[in-house]
Length: 399
Image: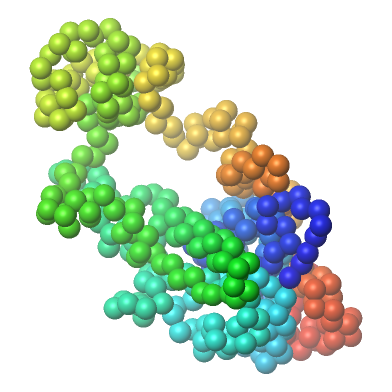
C-alpha cells in the first residue's frame, strides 16, 4: 500500500488490482483510477481481449479506452507458477483485488478470498458476476441484457403494443460497477475500524431487480401491475417539433400549473378532465392534441428555451451527434480529450463527480505491458536481472 502526506486526489495512496474483463468490472476499477487510486490492469501477454472491440478511432478501440484510461498495464502469464507468485507479491501491498470471472474460477486460479486474506488480511476483494457468488443461477454465464430481462425492465420498456426493448447502452453493467465501487469504499471505511478486509459480491441480475424496484414492490404488495407507457403521455411524454423531438417531464401539480401558463392555456386549469394527475392520464388523448399542436409549431430550441425559462422540466431528445456537441458536456468535462499512444488523442469519460478540493484525474490509456517493469521494480523491488529473466521465460511482457 502506498502512502502520501500530500493528497491531490480523493483515493491517492490506495492500490487496486484489476483482473476485470469487459465492462462491469473494469468500469468499477476506472472509478478508482479517476479518483486517484493506483489501478494496475492485469492482462495477458498479448493484451486484454477488449482492446480489439469496436468501434475504433484511428486504429484505437473506443470501447477499450473508455474503461481503462488512467490505469497501469501489467502484462503477465498467470498460467505460470512464477506469474502467480508475482501476483501474490502484489496482493501483499494492495488494498483491493477485483475480478469478474465466473464463480469458482478465481479459486481454481489460486486467488480465492481465503488465500488472499492469508497473504494480506486487509485485502478487500470485489467479486462481480452475472448471477452472484451464491444463489440458484450462480453457475450460469451472462451479460448486461440478462439483468434487464430478469428484473422486468425490458418488459416495462417500449410501447404497450410492441415487443420488450432493452436499453441501447449497458445500463446494468454501469450500475453494477457503481454498486461495486460503493461497496468497496464502505468496506475500506470499515477496515479502518476492524483492521480487516472482506469480500464484496455484486451481480448483474441483482442490479436488474433494483432498477425495477418500484413496480416489483407494487406487485409484491398488492399484485398491482404497472402499465407500460412507452415514452409517457400528457405532460410526461415526448413531442415532435418542426426539427426534432422534445421530452417534457412535468407531472406534479405545481409543474402542471406552469405548463398551462407557459402554453397560455388557462382553460386547462378549469377543465375537470385535467384536474389531477390521474385524470390527466385518463384523458391524455385530449391533452396531447393541444400539446402536439403547440410543439409542432416550434423548433426544438424554441420549445425548450420557452418552457425551460418558465421552470418546466424539458430537454431536447438529442441524437448522438447533437449530444456530443452539447455545451453542458464540455463545460462540465463529462467527456475529455486526452493523449493516446495509438490514435494520437481520444475522448473519454472524464469528471463524473465534482470534488471541491481533490478533483478527479484523467490520464491516458496504457499500451500492453507499459508499466510492467515499473511495477516490478518500484513496487515489488525486483532487480533488473530478475525482471529480465521473467521476460525471457514469457512470464511477463514489457513495453
